[in-house]
Amino acid sequence: MEYIKFEDFKKMDIRIGTIREVVPVPDTDKLLCCQIDFNEVDTEGNKKLRQIVSGIHEYYPDYSILIGKQVLYIVNLEPRMIKGYESNGMLMAVDGLDNNPVFLVPEVEVGVGSKVR
Image 1 (cartoon, rainbow, N blue to C red):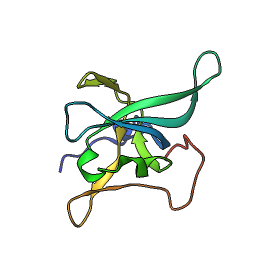
Image 2 (cartoon, rainbow, N blue to C red):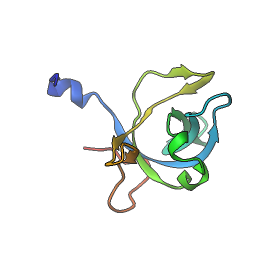
Image 3 (cartoon, rainbow, N blue to C red):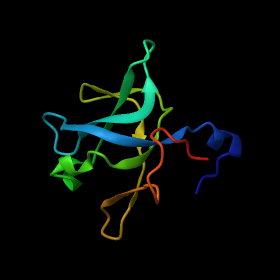
């Protein structure tokens, strides 16, 4: 295991986001493009969703069940282009006993955009 300094850890912005829309990324088997609500607004005060691409399609063939779920995301990663889609964050999950991803979720519903502390 490689250790990091606490100051480096504090730089990560981890928040609860609610999945609002999901579509598969064309010509891929694993990627889903998700629109995530972090309670952000644009410069005109309109609600803004953040697009995040995640490699979870094989585990959620019926990806519609993801809509409305509250999940942890790292939101301050540099944007990255993945198969032509800009991804603005990273979904957080752990490997389950069957090696399938298990989302890290709050025990009870929390405010959209709540920051992990």
